[in-house]
Image (tube, rainbow, N blue to C red; front, side, top):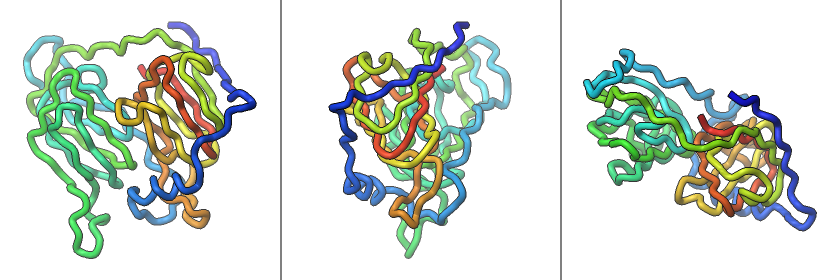
Length: 247
């Protein structure tokens, strides 16, 4: 495996962050109302299964957690029919096959008698190739007793470089290699938005701390499997990001 070489991208002098404070407010209006804490969302847990995949088509029992990002059945987790349970925080959960499109969260966020967030869903079909997208910070537990036990397929990409981005406007394929990346906030807090935000990209608040006193609410520290094809623009405001090629 090639050693990743750090890549520091800098926006051209004429490029300026496209996001304004009003954008921050708009994004945060849809986020959960959370207490001030010392850090952002919990570190994502590595998926685990109740039994090792035998390498054939025999159904298997799997149980794992997913955090913010785009997760593909057959690539990031086994295809199957799942029970979904929100175990921390709250946010949006959407699947590309239409099986789920709802706000999910733990009961404490259903305030004033309003059922804003669903905690659990049963028998959600996530066939091979289906993308399950999580945003807003919700952490989901997925359980299946009949998951596909065939080996997961590798993600098809050949990028190897890590990319560090500060505030600015960038273009995939020009300022950094196009590909699929895991995002980690390393400093500050602010808006991160790609021009393909509705098709595998990102539109969220990312940061390393909670800043309620400064007008900031919940922020994402990590966001997995963000697709940035050739020509996609990425706007970063107020936060420094580390982009690492998704495995």
